[in-house]
Image 1 (cartoon, each protein chain N blue to C red):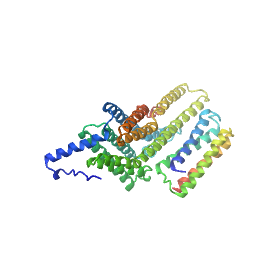
Image 2: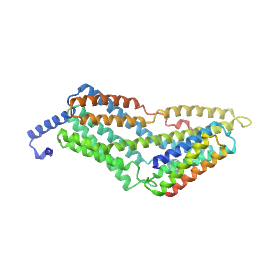
Image 3: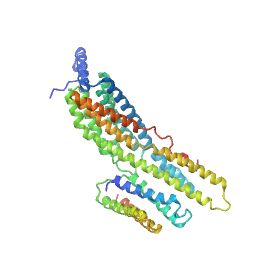
Image 4: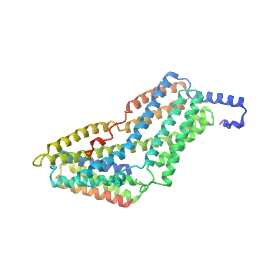
Length: 329
Length: 107
């Protein structure tokens, strides 16, 4: 195994540092070699774009989780003619601000890490590779800090999050790979580190998929509860004598709005996109760690197919936060 | 049964109850509808409480209680498939709710 290349600026005079930088770029470029630059570039750009959109979608889903719960509380209280107060609204939240942040940080770390791998695969200039690596490194540190905070000082009434273990393990593994790249180790060492650490990163995708499915279903369920409350109120109202036409019109408006909100919510489930992200990540790792030109060609084709599929799964986040179905609005 | 399976079981029960409640059979104005709706809301509150607590899957008591939830939700699915009478469905939903209560107590 070759010796690590020391990177402390003080340890080298200016001309030697320049030489070191050029050699590091050459090492990094040899990771990508022998596949068409344009194709890699196109696939990686599409990948980065889709991953960035997914990060936004996922954060919207989590933020919406509390909004939907609060909305449901308001609807229930309204139809039961019970008081509505701030502790009631806040008490309905299922995720604390720290929990939402730690999940957002986790998916951002995955995005930034895969962006760094994509830059590496595309054979981008060395300074861009180093910049992307630095960004990914900062993101991985944010995950570790956030998880540590949640474990040491959990939010009131809540234990440490379920995804804490896979998130912390993935952040450490990402940090380990990035350290190897930052330390300008050889191409074979970088490949080995990416391969070795990948098994510690992928469980985080699974945790995010599970949570995403769950929070999406919970939101759907909360929306249905609103629908049932509206249906009940409407059907009781039509049996009244005399019938209050104004009330019926108002209720039917809310039911129509519910149908629209419900349809919008259906398109905002990011679970399939997270699975697509995971598959594209796997294809990217295969491409970056492949050595032989024929392998690289094969994995590039796989990456292009997976990225296309991933990009197709990424949808524009729903603008309906279901609050429009609120009969009190 | 891990926490995800437990949540999925409760979600499944909620979905099945919603289908009955939204159908208007039993009628929206009937006491049975009211009873089922009250149970639905209660189960929803229980699921929220579970979410706010975050379950540790390696706890044996939680594991046992979660198994009871699964048994009760399976009975509910079977009763609905066999078009059981609404009173039997209400009884099974009460069992699901009691089993979830046991999970909450075990936390």
